[in-house]
Structure formats: structure tokens, C-alpha cells
Picture 1 (tube, rainbow, N blue to C red):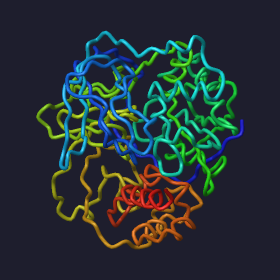
Picture 2 (cartoon, rainbow, N blue to C red; picture 1 turned 45 degrees about the horizontal axis):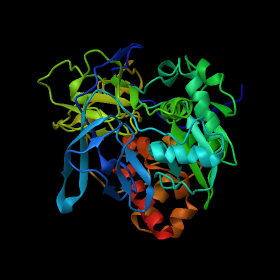
Picture 3 (cartoon, rainbow, N blue to C red; picture 1 turned 90 degrees about the horizontal axis):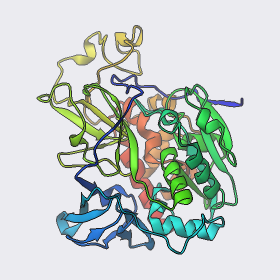
Picture 4 (cartoon, rainbow, N blue to C red; picture 1 turned 180 degrees about the vertical axis):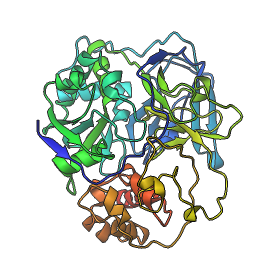
Length: 449
């Protein structure tokens, strides 16, 4: 087994790892799709309040390419359209009829085997929206010349779900998805596996895919790191990525011509009473099924992991691309001379605290920044957790100054915000580097369009 060893990185040992138990929850009465969660998209609504929809009915499309649509995850009725300032589309709320009737494909009698047929099926069903393009981290154009497709079979983020456990009985759907994806590119389909994975059997049996094993700390499971170490992207090339659980959904579409928006997510974090897996539907409200240790305690519910996820407010929903929920305490407090205390229970990547020498097995972390924004200085901390042959500090500075030529020279096309998540963690300047990278990608995309 050829193992690619990632040496730079950082594991955040957070409390609240999920038990290997999957609970089937009742279908939620209402689901929501948030158009602001699709980077680079200019959404235009296709439905109105009171309309009847099927699972797979297009709710809105992208003005830059009308073929890119976001589908309804269930059948039912459009309950509410929520807009913000200047009539910005914020949320499409659907009342679930629990019938789960899906759109039909009468023109397709057998699973398509050529590129055009597969692409048409993915576009019509709306499942094309689960693909992400590098560079820019956006939904790709159906006309894009895809160099290669990359899929990571594991996630190394804090408390991340075990996809091998979730998908252990879906080998046929995964293979059908791989068969379809192999027709979409003249290159290869690459699969990254965890060298220390406990449930790799279902992935190791897949064919028509080139497998690479990875070991080391987070972000070894990030598909961007895997692309960088297998076959880096160059200017002018397009690479497509896909989550392994969404691959199974596409495989089910190919074999059964049926849209299944159910998703198994890991409900995790130190404030969850019983961390485990839950089978629900994309767009569910997590307040309906999470159980907290203390309902009176101020907590933050995060769609995704603590490094890259989005805060879910009251009435919010599970993110379209997220496969995890994390609940941690709010950190609204000031700590007097906290930096001068031994810090035996504080997590740090430096030797500032005693916990670096005698670390507890897991940490109870909250949302406190433990400091304010400061000047950006070169400390060498980014480089210790950033496993790319890129100078992260200089790339951040190039983005802040809007120097496009420098951004290109320093590797902007290879990265997306999640690749800088650990830089946020160790940043002594308290900068939101993920937000800065997003701004840089948007600037480059607009300049190149």
C-alpha cells in the first residue's frame, strides 16, 4: 500500500465523538434551502408560495447558467419565501407532505452510459449542484472540460463522520456513481482513503477509480490536500470534487432513476447529550432532533464542523453540503490574565500552556477568540499546519492588497477556504483567513469571467 504521509497539520481533540449508532428520525414537517449557501451563484426563483413541488423540482436557478438548478429535497408545498434587504433571496421553505413523490424521467428507460446522457440526467435532476469546481469552489458549468474528478472517502476534521460506517451497505450505489463519473472526464476518478481507516472495505472494492492512501493529522482528509499531493491543478484547468455520500446519491439516481435526498449526519460536540448518527433529509431543522445536556446553557449549533461550518440560528437548517452537526458552548466571557495562567485544560498549538506537555485526551472548547484582531505578522505558525507547497502568509497579503498577479504566482488556484481553516485556529493575529481566501477567489473569478 502506497501511503502519502501528511506531516503538517493539527488534530483538534474536541469532546463529543459520535457513537457508531444510526437513528432513523421521522421526516421533518418543514425543510429549508438557503440560496446564500451557494458560492458564486446569482439565484432566480422558479416557484412561488403555495406551489406544489416534487422531490427534484427546481426551486431556483443560477442566472449565470440557467441549467444549474437547486432541487427540492421532498415533495410538498412551498410554505414561505423569505427575502432580506433589497429583496435578496434568503430561504425557500417547504412543507413536507411525507409522500416523497419524485420527478420522473420517462425519456430514460435504462441507465445512461454515455457522457451526454449522464450529464443530462444529473442536470435535470438537480444533482449536478452537488459537484464543486476547483478553482473557485463553485458549482461547475455543465460545459466544463473536466480534467479529473477527486473524491475523499474520509474527513479528518474534529468529530467528523465515519463515511465507511455510514456507507458500508451502499457499495452498489457507490460503484454506479463511479461508473457514471468516469464518463464525465477524459482523465481519471481519484479516491482518497484513510490509511488508518476502520471501515475501508466498501471503498477498497470499488473499480474504475485510482486509489491513494493518506495518513497524518488534519487536513489529510481534505480533498484539496489530496489533489495537491496526487496531481496539482494548473491555471486554466478544471477539477471537480464530490462528497462520498453524495456519490452514493448519484449512484442511486443512475440505477433507480430516483432522487433520494436522505442523508446520514453525525450529531456531535460536548453539549450533545448522546452524540450519534441520525438519518434525516437535506434542509432539516436540527432543533427538531438534537438533544442538549443543558437546555438553559448558551450554545452554538453549527452546520458542519467547528473549523469550517456555519452557525445555525433559530429556524435555520442543515447546510446543503454538510454531513455533520456540532454543538459547543458559547464563549461570551472575558478572562483576566488568561495567558499568564498554567492552562492545563486549554488547547494550544504552541508551548504557552501546560496542556502542551500533559494534554488531556479531549478538550471542552467554546467559541471564545481569547483575543482581538491584531496586525498580521510573520510568526511561522501557518506553515506548521498548512501542508501545501504554498506560502500562506504571503498569499493572504496578496489577497488583502488585491494583487492578482501575485495571487496567481502564490497558488490561489489550488486552494479554497477550508484549506486555511487551521490557519484560523493558530493565527496569533486573529484573522479570518477563510473569509479572506473567499474574497480572493471571488476577485479572481470575476476578473477571469
